[in-house]
Length: 489
Image 1 (cartoon, rainbow, N blue to C red):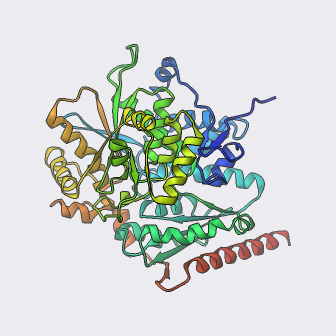
Image 2 (cartoon, rainbow, N blue to C red):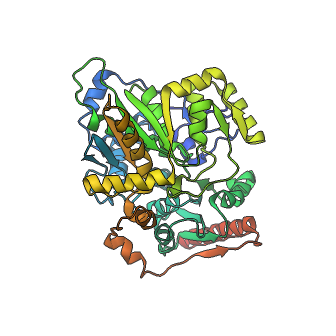
Image 3 (cartoon, rainbow, N blue to C red):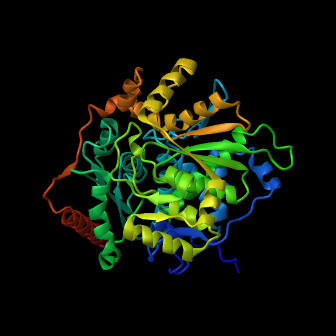
């Protein structure tokens, strides 16, 4: 008998346990919580030393083996899926560390097709989905709301897949021109893009409404792929391990030396991944860096987990998020897997949009994570300085992290080696590069988007967005039944 593999439970404690496949296909747990591993494997110093020589894909393979289990996906098959996931990356190491002046280490997570870190996790997620769907001969329709990067990465990871259709809602005029073109120029039969006259919070409404209809979701095999999906957090854990091994001075000491990892974030997925890695025994110190939308910063500093009046538009637009969904995972982890505390907190937050963390939880959080909030002015100054010192262009999100590094080095020389995560390429954000007084460098693939045909259905103010979404889903299901019947004949 195989021992039962890794099990997942909801942060709110009211949902049945599931295996990795169950967590992968569900997004939110049925009780409104998020899935987390029931137990975290503890990594010995010996294991960490062994892992230290692995490539980035090699680390993803080790982590996925631990958290999926060979009884669900045999090890050799898993390795093949992960190699396939990374096959379209432009850099052979997939992820690359740039060592720049003044102790600045920048981990480039953006060598995938859409030039953003989401390619890393979504390509793997899509391979896992496709594997389970082919085994069961099932079809799913993926529905994604995007503030810019998720949509294009999700489209690229599933375009042309025969067991999946994808519907993306993008906020017309709220993403950059390049982000929009990366979504509207993929003219594949299984890709359906809508341009919504609203911001990314408003376009979430019809998606929530559709997912609230449980019978409809079941009938049409709907799923979401946003940053709450466990498989995305799982792959993002590899960023932290890779950053650690690239920046640690030596692994011969006992205890192992620490490395500081600076995580720029909006929805806190990369931060949750770092907290889990830390809990498994990776000796990192986490710093979370946000833009003017500072709910995470206020939570770390004062225990004040409350919505601000409105989303502020900043140069780091992909992090213009009011509700950092993945904080729920962090609250659960730091409260000692206490689902009662987590459920009470999140239900109060959902009712009143404002909650003060219990003292004990707040002190755990401020012990695990340091935080900083960065203004647009600091973003452009950081981009300009990094260019001046290194002839290296940062995207505005990466600049949020590097701004923290510059701020710290002015106060004292770093006591720990520090690694800044760079979630996107500057090539995606020419507007911000111009705002910093610099000259954008646009790769040929991105220039080519301008001349491609586009396809995008408008969702206008006054239209019934929920109805339009439901109709599209029903049409896809009809077509699927058609394909299925043709295959039978």
